[in-house]
Length: 169
Image 1 (cartoon, rainbow, N blue to C red):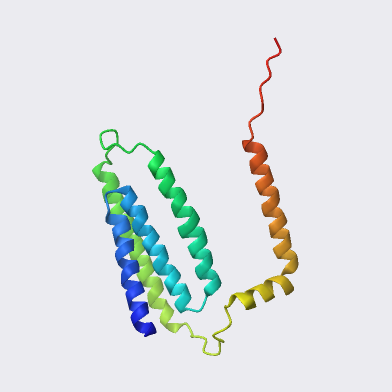
Image 2: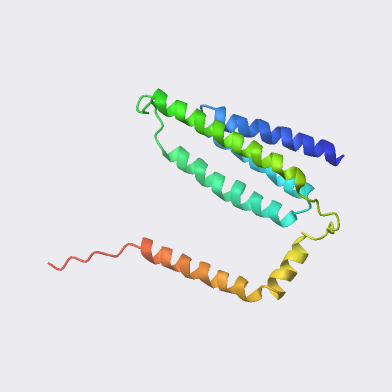
């Protein structure tokens, strides 16, 4: 049963990834990207990585894609005002993508020699184990990171806050 779910999620991910790139309408591209992130979340669940699946769902699908979609809706995307790319830039993009594909194929050919860990427990990547490790073994770095994020958030609010201009006339 898991094989069929994996094949379905893989086909869905490949299809939606291709449609993200091929689609001419930017709103459709973002919607296909959301479907792709759902497929990746399904793969995380198949790998028994519930925490990664929920973080992917909340952060990428819930926050970043909504931000992309709302930003895209606010932009004025008229085809008349859009500049067309020269042919040399298009050829360069195709050559770059082809070279990237060759590098990825070369890297994937080298993965045959990598050993597969067979002694891993299926409950290794559960949220309970992750929380136990974070709050016992890595408590100080975890708390330090939270204080760092809090100070960055306060700094961003203070930088974005507009000062009231008082007229002294």
